Image 1 (cartoon, chains in turn green, yellow):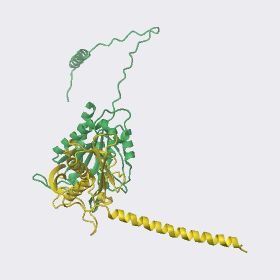
Image 2 (spheres, rainbow over the protein chains, first blue to last red; image 1 turned 180 degrees about the vertical axis):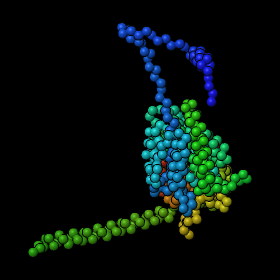
Image 3 (cartoon, rainbow over the protein chains, first blue to last red; image 1 turned 135 degrees about the horizontal axis):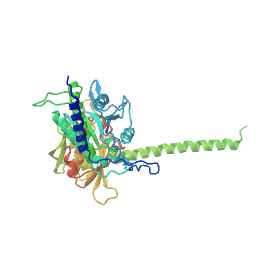
Image 4 (spheres, each protein chain N blue to C red; image 1 turned 135 degrees about the vertical axis):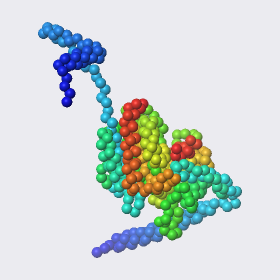
Length: 248
Length: 208
């Protein structure tokens, strides 16, 4: 146990007082108050509200719209829902707000999905798909020509105002997946409801991993492969949280 | 008691009704004959005496999302619509070749069933423009059902068709897709078929 003598305490107090006096940028003069002359309070400075970093996860298909048949016992709609729920949990644990377009095996219309995404004013919208063709992950952004985002955008082409940001988000995800040694194919496509989203949007289509010189073949239902994918997506969105406010 | 006048009126109307029915049946038979004659007069066989023409096919590669250029040579008709249809039929046949880089589903086809593909291609002027043509590609109803489902395979199929049409018929500036003569939402659950696609040299790059 350490003891400080009274003289030491006094010296420490003086030193702290001197230090705080030096650190203070400006001395604050408190006006003398009198009933006839009330204190003049400085005007409140309005600070712009900082938007919360929110991510929309759209699990593709659902209900009678099954999507691709991944295997005899696995449909695309079930795989995307499972990945969506797991990604939501991981992102929430990282302090990221998440909105999902579906939480059950329901057929949610494309317009409803777009309405949900557009109302949440999200910093990123991730559409999760799965297919049996190709290898690794296919990252698609809208093929619409970029335009300036305005208050009122045509419903079918609302994504045009966010294409530039979507391409940057796709680049972040590409980097994270490359870091996880997952092959990536980048492309542009016309996809509903993505073309109606008013947020940086990327469709992430997961395909089986083909064997090559450095990796073994992995099926879509491989738990380790899915975990690697979700970790890479989380890392990309963590990185995007630092970058998205700097976007034009 | 039925009067004589009423009996005469009844039989007259009965004879008139029977005569009119006979005439209608005969007219219907004649119309059917005319329709059959018109259908059989349509040229169904491509002119084999036409010299072979070199065509360029852009075949998708699912492994890396690219389009591979392939040259073929085959006789083509003079009519642009029929020419476009034959080019696309050749392209879709290339998808089904052994070791194809963009395989189509076809294992569940019943024996004797016609291979699903492109039913018709119509070329028309681009609306509100004096330059270029719009190609309307009409897929057969079963094409979407047999096509692999996914963003990449469907997007590559559309890019391949658009690129192949533009490479061989450079007048084509826009492409629109129908399924069984009607507008469809998607090809096989993903690629949007409700929009008009622009065919240009830069649009032929496929996946990046």
